[in-house]
Length: 167
Image (cartoon, rainbow, N blue to C red; front, side, top):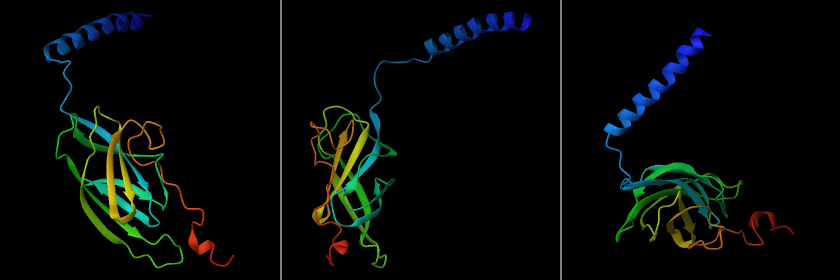
């Protein structure tokens, strides 16, 4: 019982100390100039993307015509969008056919980050045909009706072609 009384006295003292330290530390309601977003990749190509990086941050492994649904943390970006905002994207591609030998090819591009009005929790990285890449800051996946970028990838009806050759 004596220990309980001492702990009840210590708790308010600890709280008072923490509040006094917080009051002296100059907390501000102003937001920092940067925000963070998880990387979420979408592959709208027939190639396998073995790995991708955005400004050096690893983003994952994406099979052909797939992606979304998981993300890797985190990329720091400016809270306020500005003209000329870009990121360097590096990625590998290889054949999606499991019978083909694994031969990865590296690609690299400096890509504009599309204009955003508010910060988002994800940087959706869209790999499109012809080595096009789009970067979109957003608060969710590419499946939402208000999403400003490409929809989540959908494989063609005859995908994968190596399974349809002998039919």
